[in-house]
Length: 421
Image (cartoon, rainbow, N blue to C red; front, side):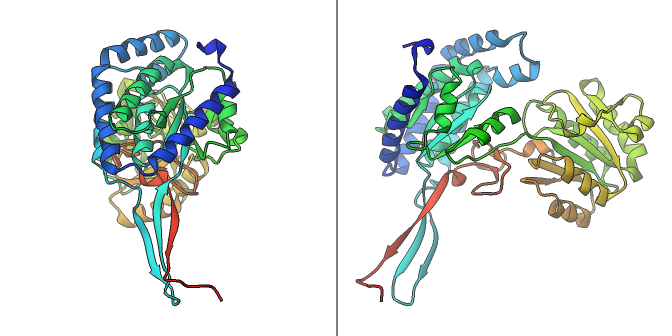
């Protein structure tokens, strides 16, 4: 059956039925079996490296000249990135099993003993765009947390995704676990996305990972509960008490280490008290690798900065571009960042602990950094092994979504014959 002959509604229904059955099978899966599946999937990925790179080459060729370099960077795989995917699976296998954790325990006066324990969510729909490694990370995290997953990667990465899913299923087979615990939507028809978002009968949670357009589509069309990952208009603020050399080095990394990730700094905010020194240092640190667009004050200090437009302050560039805003102190910086941030990750550079505490307390973002690159906004860097996304909402999970965030809980009540009066 080819993409063109698949009926999206029937296809999602079939995937959902198989995923629900697989999820029931995972409820009793041992930690050892799940870890075996992950390690065997890592081995399968390494063995399939030539096949995966060939498939990825088809994906890249299909968009070359049509998409920006930052998009192709997110899409492209090489041997190092495949090894990174395989290593991530092994790292997740080494993490504690989040299922069955006792979250609370208390005794009632009538003798009832009550436990709250962590359990899988069930079936998760993962909708993402161009990065093939998201499919591997999401599959591994869902498997370790006892969830079945239905992947719907971007059409641009479909060849890569299918090889990755085949490797995950080989790992599941080797461990005696249901292969349908990891499946992918095998049609590029966008009607399949709509069907997945309405598949309440089978899907317990949908997680989108991609640009604002994708996330808003999921938010607006889903009847299934969602865990949203909005764009990353991340700010790095240089406070008047910052070590300016340190700030310039950190901000260069925050912007340019990888421009296409959601934790990249897009906006640089600088205290007027140190702007005359800080602005040129940052311009020098960026060099010719980054176009800077600033307000009047920034442009007046260094004419290598281009004048910014109003839309620059709210733009996630995902490119070698950043905005520069000069502010009158900490309070104005807090007001500016809170207004323009997407509330993903924001940072302050300062040697003043009180100023750092005020900034980090006042800004309502999922992640706040002090004297560190915003590119540390990553589940792997947080010790989670990997992440399924950065949640920017406030319900259920916030920040990096790792194993613990992919569980729910239930109550176990133990009695000795009590009846309620």
